[in-house]
Length: 551
Image 1 (cartoon, rainbow, N blue to C red):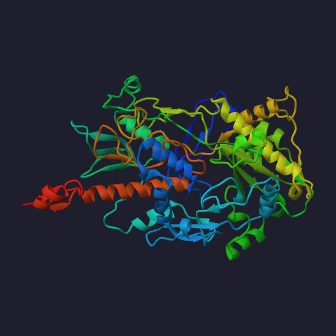
Image 2: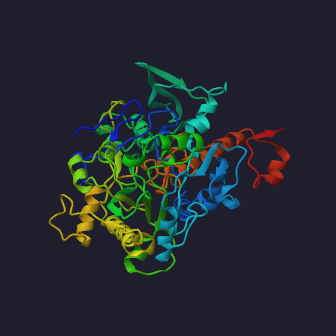
Image 3: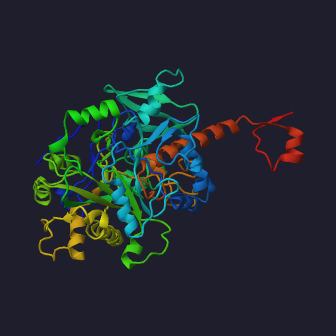
């Protein structure tokens, strides 16, 4: 069955057929929508504001051998982007100080059905309530979102819209960059781009910054001759700089655990029964209700799979699972909507999630520190051809074991906690196609279930990996985001992540942009430093940088 997609808003990327995950998708192909709009994918995303774990960034500092990237040194840049914070944790000034230079608004969601009960269920199993950004630890807590008065507030509304009136900024819509021009010395000096059917050129006096995301940044570099030498030759591109562009691809994989029903009336949202003028009124006049919900979820948890597997309560140092709670019952359009968004086989969805008059809910589980790594390569030297994306989901069997632990814990929350049992919560699923030969609810069955139903969380990262410099043969950019073996060229987006953060990637991508701006401003400020010649040579040469000397 074909589903409508929207090429006017979406670059229409998709993966190659996967061997180990997404087996319930049409042709085993996962759709990877990327924002073909101002503001990029922040105009399409689910608006969840999450920064990741401190150890994510301490690990970056270790990989790059640069303390600039440890948690304490990136935290100020997360805060710098906050213009207003209207979430639950305003008293946590270390993590939520508002900045006069900020632009983002972060707030709590306007809908919280069964939120407290979900968090209480976690407490029954020994998990505390947490602020996932202040800093993240193992536990359960509410979601916060990049919204302003319950409306989407991505980087277009927050930043780009304000730039139209600046004389120093020129924004070209309907323009696609197709190649970076390098001079004979390997310096980036301009960009070729297509607009309205014409090939054009823009020169650069100082630097070029690529910020096209984890799919199109490596694509543009490879089209420019910067990438794996043998691959570029194979697609008819002259290699200029041999770098592992497109490798180290990581993404978060997620599975919905459903259906669950409950013996309730009016606790869980049912769009079939309840959506109407009342909800529209609630949104327009009170900014609350169903229309404020991000991704249909109201709460989340961060968990360590090893603790679940070993049934112990030792302190979790670095969660590798993220779970979500959605208080939405079945409604008529759900299967067609999910099928269109994710390319699921419609017949499979109808069998998994049949119509019901009962209220219900569902959970999501995601492995957020995956071991599996994929790659992005070019299909040809045609700049308008979509790249070849192979995330190699669940290729490393450890990822499947981790997801299984998260799934089993969610079943335990629904079936073995007071919060859920007092409403008669029940898993009502039956053996799904592709897994009916296995003992229902056995570990082997659930592993099969996960392979059938796991799909992307749309968090691709790592394809222009940051490293300490040329000594790292897996790196594409250095710790100042400069493309190796060239000059005047940087990358500033999620593709530079040396390892994926263990949460949603929008806020970390914005932080990377803030860090890039600081690096660029500092570099060009340094180029005009002037020192006293006598003082420089005799007193301060080992203390101060100096590029120009007074006689």
